[in-house]
Length: 182
Image: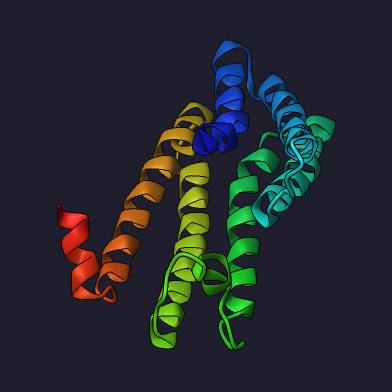
């Protein structure tokens, strides 16, 4: 349910684009992202860093798209979000605990070396996704970019997370790996 809740602004953007155009979709995305944060707080939860970064970028770049009637701003939003997140993860690479460790250590126990590898892989993923987004932006039409934004990025993220699971499984004790198989 949380995944659907987190994907709702992207899904609403996609539907608005398919029914209307990029400008209506951008306005809808700004409202959806803002509403997402407000409902998170109403439910008594603290919005996470990703939600705040996404909201800031959708307001700034989405607002520029609407103000200047230039869709390139909204198309850059995923790249900026990915690169900001990549920088945040990179900033923790040389601290006592990486960001990945801070996020997952309550449910995972890994050696420090594994946390560093995981963090580096997330940094690489974020910077790679930012570059891939720009390749799609500048190589394809807006319709293809919108489809990529929903389906391509979601699919690549799922594949990446599965690969992370494989990396993590190498560090799990044998008895835990046996439990997972049964």
